[in-house]
Image (cartoon, rainbow, N blue to C red):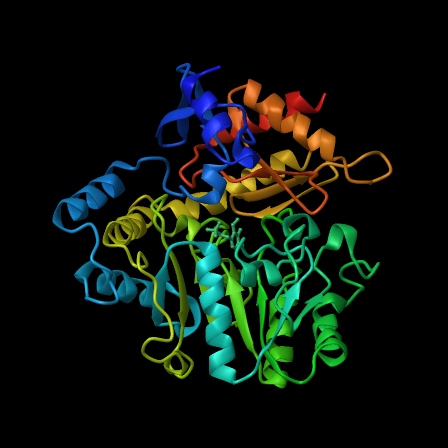
Length: 418
Ligand code: PMP
């Protein structure tokens, strides 16, 4: 056993002692990571959809290093730091729907906590609607709006005033319907959920544009338009959790942009925002932003100057290298190729692709998904897994992946299926 494995086994909490993948990584560059035996892997999981610009991108590392030499930390909210202002201004230019006011924290969960609080303060209401099969983080509020029992075990009671609407999960429609003859009944069921499970005190609905941990569930194209209208009728806000989908992952800068005309009231980000440096954020517009007053919210490390410098460089790299467009093109090609394989369902957008593994009777085949993940690793390719039933293989490579690497990936998946 390596020294690292021994240390993990002895000094970290037992729950992470083994690691989900039995490898120790010591270096990374672009789409490649290297383990302690010197073995190279094509990383098609990007550190759970984080390093969209590729591992250790030289320009992003250089920007972070430059900032590190100037100022590591001083609490960006007690004092003001230029790079934080720069990043907020830059985000205001790219966020959809005129969201021009950001607050920076450290993680996706923290961003969602802030967003929930903001929604409550802005509306003066308390209740939240969330989706079955969703995932929003591991803090108590974020778990309270997460629709997956497996993530919530032995940790209740959760925040009260949360109601769940059925997931837009066409392959296993919770309403037993078929698209398009269903007329997107899952969207209409949000109204039913509000009517029957809340007390007229709805602050917001929180939803991922594509449910990532839930197994890359892609709602029908009309879904968010309908939901936004229902929320408007109810006088409630739409919080879009773009923690996993943001920053080019789905072939648009933000995944909600796939839904024409839908402007979220609050949008949360993390993961891909700074290409691996810890940073989370929630953003909103004028009119909502003011409801949080001085001292209502703060975060010691939030808006860390190094992370913010990395985020600015990351945004420049995404544009310079045309990575969002590459995600769209490579994603479409890869998905078309994978769709020809004997897999229950291949779904996604851009480079956020899920392979739902099933038994011949369509029941979820979690063991098969696990075996494919291991077999791909043996072939030097890292992927993820997810879904409430654990039967979805997740493919989320850096957005710079080449056609040749996609070809290698698709051929390896094909070979692992036999
Ligand atoms: N929201 C979504 C949609 C996520 O996928 C995740 C993480 N997988 C989170 C929130 C939580 O992010 P973090 O782990 O940075 O707290």
